[in-house]
Image (cartoon, one colour):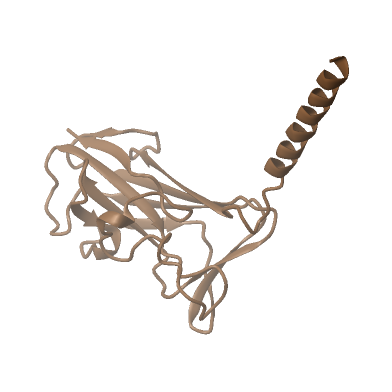
Length: 201
């Protein structure tokens, strides 16, 4: 009986070690290389979720290369990022940054100047590098009208065409939309943030 217990204990230890070994081998081939996050700040750069009518709102978008290798993102145009504000709990887009014709969306970034290859824009990240984009918005909708008080959500992301090189097939499923996103483009991916809630009072 004692021999049976020892055998079972040894077998359990071997299985635990095997499972632990498999969990720790999260290779670059089967794990996401990027993670994208969005925070909301007031005009002073302090995190906030409530704003008075007409106050400037900052959307701070970060993308991090979580791998230990350099990574390059390829874009089919010069528009690298986009933000969209929706009414809370809906897919009703009231404003998106690339549709802004009133210069209400002012973007600053540390992405650096993208280079071009075969007509594609590209940005390269060093291992573990994080890049940040900040959009300052004045609460006007796509018609340049002041939004009503109420609850809203914002999503932001990078309009990545692909990660494998110029001319390769598009990876539109995980990229942020150019133009107003559809309802099935409002979930987080490696290139899109979660929907962040805020209120206008």
